[in-house]
Length: 259
Image (tube, rainbow, N blue to C red; front, side):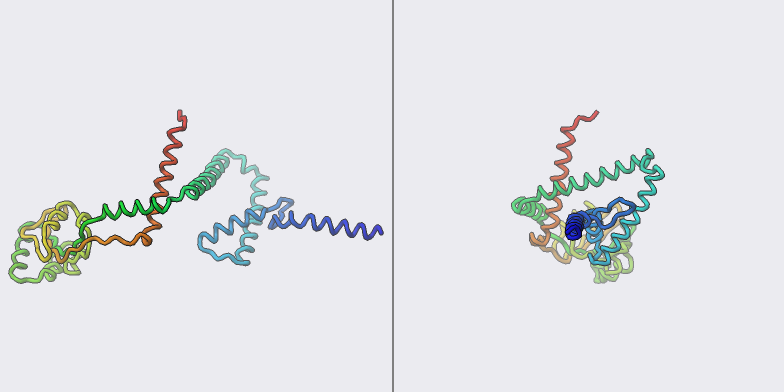
């Protein structure tokens, strides 16, 4: 009878201890390593691109055991009590807490579909206009540019002259081809000259910019076609989130008493 009672007590004690043990991945010199700590590290590694697997779980366990052993030695030597170490710990702790605050704010302040659509409409409106397919030749002096214009008007190949004389390394090898672009992407003098030309026209006189003297030809003009909303939705959502976060931070700063 006594033996049966003892056996039952041992069984109950083992069952009661099982959940507590399951909360830890190891115990080092009497100090438990919580499973939550291992889960957090695994999540971080997975977020960085590693694959969750039994091998990763085991590697994390070994890493945390090694850290605990070293931490216990650091405590024995009084390392955590050093002023410079305390300061670094405070900064690291603050960083973790602030990251969590930002993640929580972003999670609870997702832009609505209406906000995203309104921002998309505004962006497409602002981006309206035309884009130009341009060729150009860039040289160092005005007279050389005038001579090249005369040769082109006389029948010489614009592309061949660009390859031979243009100082623009990006386009010269392609016969001066600048591909499709918004003229506003160029310096003002260049943009103004290009937008005053019609399809197929070339500048009659050289255009002077900070880079030198340009001969510009417009090959084609087309209206700007914005990408569909779903294609740019992630970027728009991120932009709105950043603006909301900035407003949140600025509002908190206005309310803060800073001396």
